[in-house]
Image: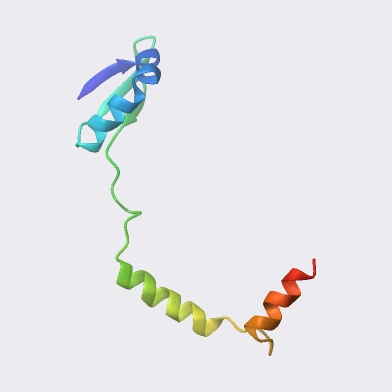
Length: 80
């Protein structure tokens, strides 16, 4: 685990992020005291496309326009 000062971290952030993306953990210090840690992302943001599509289809079934057509809704939005 590497340790860098805050000034160096600010100056070399792109290089540090490349290292972190490869799995390295980096501690950032201020006046010699640890204040932050750069760690690889857990990947929670990456969701399976099929799962997303399934969730969108479920959402479509719940949303109702109160009798309006999509075209009417578009035209209503254009009035303002």
